[in-house]
Image (cartoon, rainbow, N blue to C red; front, top):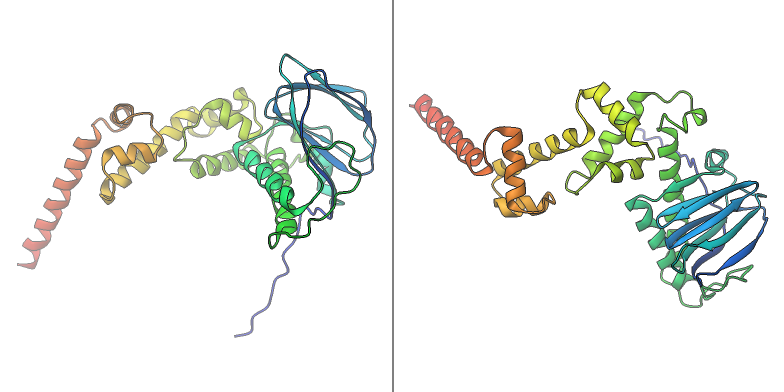
Length: 304
């Protein structure tokens, strides 16, 4: 056989890191603003801030992120009653698809937070420059660094950007002008994949909306049009289907299954199970066991 290699494509590339900061500011913090020729994003880990991006004002609270395109003026002012903790990462990227992040004020999902945490962790030991010093124009490499630290920063940052861009390109509401070819089918498949990936988690409509950059009304309309039920009904049905599979596999007891699927208690799991199947988990397990014994007995009769 003749093997032919396929060169992997890179849709988003980060070529340079400019700064990586984690700031703990006073509650009266104010930054008059700046302009630079590279990308930057700011996310709020605690507190609230008001951000000016060119001539637009944005109110960011905990868990929000905003992207500043190259040569965009941006300024920050602390608001609210608590001192803000802010993460700012600036970088260079010439990938054309980055344009869809221009002026985007978004909400971090759980995976986004993990990726940013990994970037901060790798940067804290990859560079000797303190992360909490604002007046830094060039970061300095540390003398002793874990293998691959800088590459992991690049990988985590690119994965973070890809995640946001994917959600923007598959959300039909406010972001549809970015990609007019996106259909409801693409969005539905994307969210179904997300639900499958998080089948063992405890989700809610606000969490699903935040993680997929879609409004509550669009989400519910989408699922009612596709499967004639709400998104949580869809998610819980699939969770119970997995519970039935786990009961049949007989490798976990009912308490372990309830915990594995992130139910608040065994009683709550049993109530949900009965709502969808018409029987309790114990009754289902007994019926499956009885059915299995009958099948096995039938096989023996055939062998006779």
